[in-house]
Image 1 (cartoon, rainbow, N blue to C red):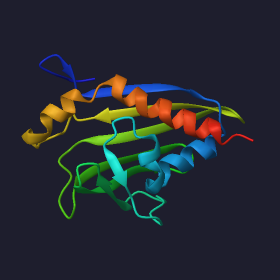
Image 2 (tube, rainbow, N blue to C red):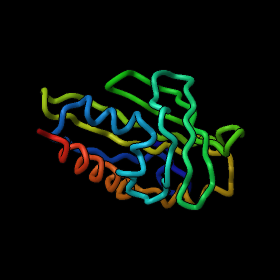
Image 3 (cartoon, helix red, strand yellow):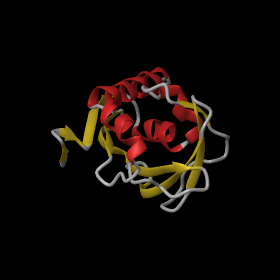
Image 4 (cartoon, helix red, strand yellow):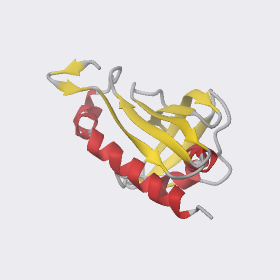
Length: 154
């Protein structure tokens, strides 16, 4: 972890979720589902049909403030890993990254780790928001994701 004036620029939160790994991954990889579990209440909506399939994919998300973000997928392994760098629509990513890692525990449980990394953030106007994104805020997303995934168990 690097530090910026004693502020962590990489923060994570995680837990074991009592759901099949593929159920959890689908909730993350389908942008239309993301506002359902966003613990920051930052995501408003995403159009259907944007399910991430590979590195290089770009999905579009409308934020709760009405701004639109392109999300550039930079890491991807089906069922296990997805990470993206957001940018203003049509713009270049300013250097922050959202990552989700899934590690199956058994058939019905998965350890999920959510990471926010702003080590390479160059847009000074985003620094205050980046500093405010703490592991507690990430844990809120993981907890909402868990509640949603666990409620789909049959």
